[in-house]
Every structure is written in structure tokens, then in C-alpha cells.
Image (cartoon, rainbow, N blue to C red; front, top):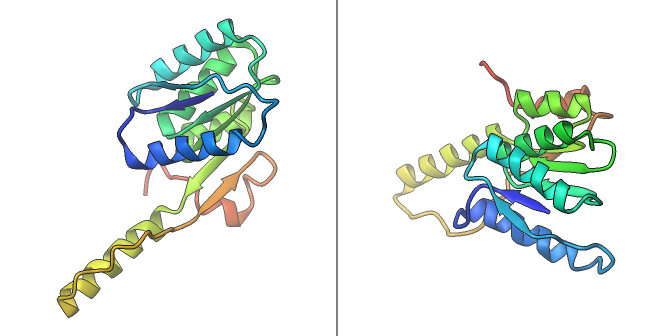
Length: 165
């Protein structure tokens, strides 16, 4: 299943679309659909617990953003099914990192916020210097997958979000 924020946000819509395209390659896996939590981790936890009641054999949840995944981790913990259900989610907040350490979540897809900011500034400065409108192309800034096994490695730690600067 997918838990996402709300329809109409391009980034999370594309994540959901990518998930749905990939899951079609595995016809033996039943996809139970997408539920929306409106960026509320409490609602995401409730969605998780109710879905696990109606689909007790559910094996995986994809959280399309921070609060979706945070709530999924909470719901899996509350139902006692963290050994049965794998949760993979975007973002790497301190709460999500703790959920990963405790086994409530299995992987975090950490974005590279510094690269995102740097790229935005470079494009803006280039525009201000040249007066030429930037090319309209897709820009990717990468991601890092954090797991319990690699969480403390320097090349992963640098992408875990900080509560304070």
C-alpha cells in the first residue's frame, strides 16, 4: 500500500506513480491502493492500523513523504507487526531515524536538501547575471537510502535531517 499526503502535489504524485508502475512488474503481489493522510502522522497511523485489520497479511507500506511514513511506522508499531510489515518512506527526520533504529521502519529515502538549495541558488544567480531565462529541464539532486545497517556511516549520516542547525 501507499500512504501519501494528498493528491495534486507533483512530487508525491510522481512517487506514487513510480511505485504503481514498479509494482505492476510483480503480478503475484496484491496492491491494496493508496490512502491519503493530509500530512497528518496521526491520520497516517490510523490508516495503517485499519488497513492492517482489514488486510492482516499486508507485507509492505510505502510512505510518500515525511508524515505519511512517520505515521506508517507508528501504526506498524501499535499493531505489533513490525516484523511482518516492511515500511519504506521518503525523508529522514529525527523521528523517522529513531523509527528506523527501533525497527518500525525499514528504509528511509533521504533527499539531499543542501544540493537542492545549492542548485536553486546557482540557477537564480545565473539568471540574474545573464538575464536569460533558465532552461526548463528536470533537475535531479539525488537521494540516499538509509537502513539500520548503514545508518551510522558518514556517507549516509550527512543526509539525515537535523532538528537544529
